[in-house]
Image (cartoon, rainbow, N blue to C red; front, side):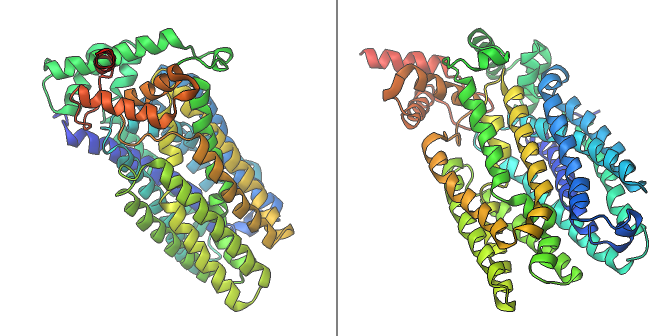
Length: 509
């Protein structure tokens, strides 16, 4: 079999990851349209808002358990095998949901499918980040999220089409069963792509890591540059293992690796992504449009599909900014814009006229823009970047678990909140967004244009410099080290060890 090399490998991994996130988006959106399906409601004895919320949210409860399990198995079986295992669970879960005729049957299917999603959404960002060059790492992850939103758009149009078969069970069984087809496609694509070389080094499989590094760089495995990159990865892993362990007691120590701080940054961003209100829109936009704003079922599905296409556009546009503008400025802009949009959505619902309903829809699309350029993708990218090699699986698993736990909470309370709190339910999420701003400004570290090894070095420099050393200054020193070492900023691995010595030598002159 002809092995892919160079950019073909990177794009192949991106397509496989994108297929996984398309499935993730499809799963997010599929149930929002089905909740108004007449045959579905009749099959399950017309469940009330509380039961509907429980059916929808059990998927995310399964995702919580899947992400938690990644903490224990991710570094043992590898990125690819974790994704393959997740796809197996998703295939089974989709089949169970499509064949369900009772609530327990449906709930089991939702939990099984959610478990697979928890595994996938932990492993996929790590696999992409660990096989990408530093100058385009953010853009490649955004491509996955573009496909994620495209998956939501597909569900909207599919559910819209099936409104013309309101009394036929195929109108909801086919959309649920289609999950299994998507998961099989993702599994097959993942099978033919290589493992992360950084994970292989972590497991001591150096020959395989060297071969994959050579394929990624389109060079011979014996090339001196490949040997140097492999040695940097080996040295990084050994250095980290000496400085830290994965035990929870040692996570509380504020050592030079700053493990706890880095895990909290990733998990905090995952919490913000859910507290910003995205899953009110992603899971319940048709319901919001019909119950809170008075639109018809079909018009609600059309608006939902257009919303998803617009979000795809803004996410695609943000690829131009993510690696040049950076993560932190986009997070600040996004939080401010989302907060204002949600407040004005609440105002439109509170006034309750036809004109103000249109106003609310307009600001739903304004929210769409700010979310699309910021919180759509950065909370998935950042934890995989910010954590060290030996703690990447642990940190990403914790952040993904946090994400799914709060997805579960938001999805569970949204129907109840819409029914009981009305406009003030939406106002609450506007306030949450504004509250993010000081936390992002004070605590979040910029990772754009840094290799994963350089990000580790930023935290070490800041720790060694004490209170007088800011993260901005530490980042500037790391960039200086790379300049002294002659690094182009377009590689998979950057050697900071020699550069560190060079800087110390220069300071001593």
